[in-house]
Each structure stands twice: as C-alpha cells, then as structure tokens.
Image (cartoon, rainbow, N blue to C red; front, side, top):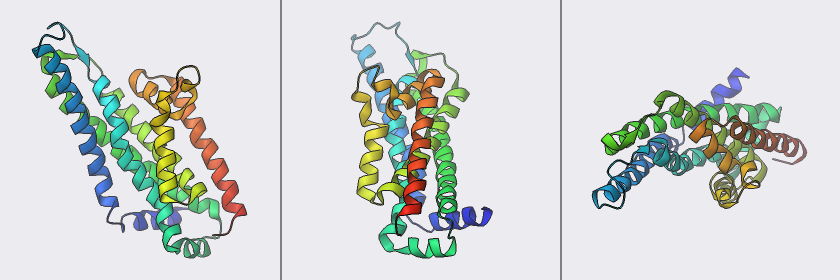
Length: 235
C-alpha cells in the first residue's frame, strides 16, 4: 500500500496544475474573506451599522473557504480524471490489479492535499480577515477554527476522488462536486441540514458534530459506490 501511495503522490506532482492548486485555494480564500470583511467596515464607515458592531472572523472566512476549496477539489478530481482522459488508468490497474488499493491511494493523496490546503487557507484567511476587521473583529478561537477548515478540505477532496471514480469525467465531477459542496446550501432545513454543503458550513462555523457526521457519511457512501463500480466496470 505504501508503494501505491508513493506512486500516486509522484504522479500528482508531475501535473503542472497541481502546483497551482494550493496557492490558488489560499489566494481565493484570502481575497474573498478580505473583501467581505472590508464590506463590513464600509457599512460602519458610512453609518449603515452602529460603530459598536463587531463581526466574528469566521463569518466572512467561512464563506470564503467555500470558494477557495474549489481549487482543491479541482486537484482531487484530476487525480482520477486525468488518467481516464489519457488512458493511463489501464497501466495503473495493470501495475496494481487490486483496484480498491488504487482508489485508496488516490484518496490518501487527495486528503493530504486537502488538509494542507485547507489549513493554509484557514490560517492565511484568518490573519488577513483579522487585520482588515481590526477593532471590529469579535473574539474567536483561531486554532480550532483553522483545524476545522482543514478537516473540511480533506473530506471535500476525499468525496471528490470518489465522485471522479464514479463519473470518470472532469466536467461531470467538477459540476457534481460544486453542487454537493456549495450549491445545495440553497435548500432549507431540515432537508438542507443533510446535504454536504450545509453540513460543512455548520461544522466550520460552530463545531457542529452533526455536520461533520453528515459530511463524513456522504464521503463514505460515495466511496462505497466507487468501489463497487470499479470492480464491475472496464477501465
């Protein structure tokens, strides 16, 4: 298994696009969070809000993370779809006939990238948002919040790897991942509470263990389906 993970790790960083994914996630998160925080200060400066108002750093940062993680799920998608697109997946399965091991190795790499990218985005976004808000920033615990963002990044990438294995299409995977992880927020409770998009937001915002459980359940279900289809379909 270690060799499979090592091989997938090497293949991942042989893609030029992989080197831009984590920096892009950080930049998108920071820029969006700073913009939202600046909007809050603008409202105060123009007397649209009382000067005594404060804003929790996680309010703009939580929204920004959802945009930033799109760069991470794009990389997680490429771990699978790039090989199906070029036909390299056949050689991968010949070298590693146990297809479940291949999926697991790709998932491990995706999770590691998601955790690292999520943590980097969370830390950079928190610092930038805190600087912009300055005296208008409400007290908050930075370390737990950034760790929750990292966990969501890891799970989002794991879910995307499974979706890519099921769909085998870059466009289909990216669209489906976007809908599941962002778009389904439009659904109202209680239905919306059981979607990965809302679950991720709740976990990041208030340490909702129910939210973490829902996001994890979606990820596990996607992997079960991916394992079944990998065993039944041709490469």
